[in-house]
Image 1 (cartoon, helix red, strand yellow):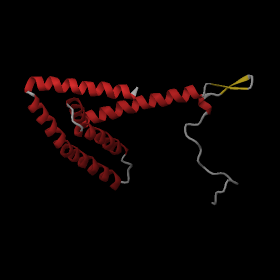
Image 2 (cartoon, rainbow, N blue to C red; image 1 turned 180 degrees about the vertical axis):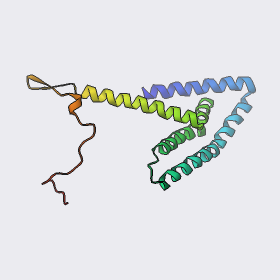
Image 3 (tube, rainbow, N blue to C red; image 1 turned 135 degrees about the vertical axis):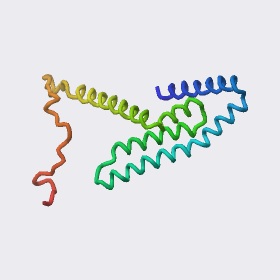
Image 4 (cartoon, rainbow, N blue to C red; image 1 turned 180 degrees about the horizontal axis):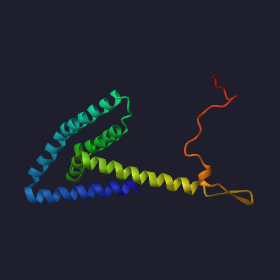
Length: 158
């Protein structure tokens, strides 16, 4: 499935290049791709330094910079998209450099991931068959997180 998606993306990039080259000429289209790919790291560095400054501020206050770490990941993905030649990838990568767009992507991806995790959790704990009798395991009886505390006799020194 991923392979098919990559093939479709490459085909779309070729079609976009041909369309742009038809409008402005082959050499100008090629020059535009080279310039945007060369300037991409400059844009990524500038945006990344801003996120790094926010990360250091949060760490200085003793807070966990989770939002900034996600920002950094999305900036990295956008930077790769910009640096690889192609008009569609450049456009998407540049969009990811815009703060509100980046936050929308993070929020949307977070909601989708949470739904997938919830679906897997409820599907996993519905009915378990042991021998010939089904055993119903309620989702509410399954802890959200494993208990990581050590009890007596399990090698813990207190």
